[in-house]
Length: 465
Ligand SMILES: *[C@@H]1O[C@H](CO)[C@@H](O)[C@H](O)[C@H]1NC(C)=O
Ligand SMILES: *[C@@H]1O[C@H](CO)[C@@H](O)[C@H](O)[C@H]1NC(C)=O
Image 1 (cartoon, rainbow, N blue to C red):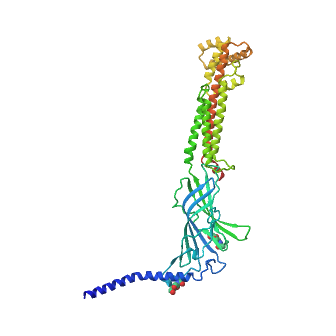
Image 2: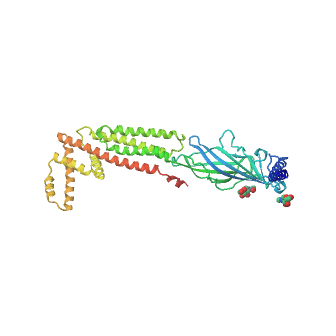
């Protein structure tokens, strides 16, 4: 009795197992049979259409994975992406309910017809742009074929470095069929923009967008149109590296260059200081030019910035030589030329609020040199003047009187006392001081202008677009 129940139980169990496995095995058999029947007499070199005039519509989609590199020097672009290509195969259709409910099959991609999609601007040597099928395709019962596969492309990408390091580059990947014209194989994109949600961020480039464009070309060889899909990768350089490692030190050197004019001309350090800055900048320029393509068609913005800075520092060297020459006053017997005195001790000194010191010198000079009839009156004036008007008058008087002093001095040049020579030397030194201040301000201003115009992020770009 017990063995009887045991046997029925085992039998029942076996039946259950068989029942659960049955549809699977039937389906698997059906799939094998279906595949065999589909692929017998299948010619994979012909387009899968029953009427020769039917167009095969290939839908093209891309998911971006990683921008591997964009080399400015070699103008080579390497990218890893997933291709998704869909088309209809009229010979790979079946009625699912007649084939054990099998509604999709995976077939080795070399067993069926595939669109011969090439990357036209490929420069990888092994494949010549052919997208070799390395994965299987899936086919549904309606004949829809889906081919998904990962690929790494090496393509040419012209890099325009005019705005380096604030440049934006557009690398275009051009996909199309090599042998079929647009009348036989029509390509179109599924989404107007490539999928970007799985992109690994690149350390050097930001991917701003990846639109797709459908393009129809007619080549001189053949009258029929050829359809290609352009995948435009809009890249923007991350400029922080260059700002931090090159621009920042350069700006510091620029500031030092401005304050170099603060070193007293007769300390002997000054020229060496400027030369050191110049050398440091040349070294920076060398580093920069090593990382850029050697083009002569355009100069990168950063290069122009460096060149301008070098020009500024070079100018500082030259100006410094002039100032040092001035402060050593030259032949002791020569007074400061009239135009220089006017330019430096009058206008520039006034501009840089140094006229009080300059005036002081004049007063010294005037006391030392000649007797002057206004002197007394001046002093008495000073004792009792209370109104601005009177001050003005006294100022004007002083100017006239200074002129007189100068004239008389120039005429009585041959017999000059020692005191006068010293006064002249002082005047030369004073001129050097004023010139120094003027140079410091103008070099500072020029530095600011260079920084503002050449370190702008998107000034020119907006004009172009
Ligand atoms: C598929 O086959 C079933 C059963 O033979 C039939 O009823 C159905 O109409 C067929 N479907 C198509 C789309 O031909
Ligand atoms: C090709 O595809 C485009 C867009 O999908 C469509 O507008 C065009 O009519 C198609 N051409 C042919 C010949 O089917």
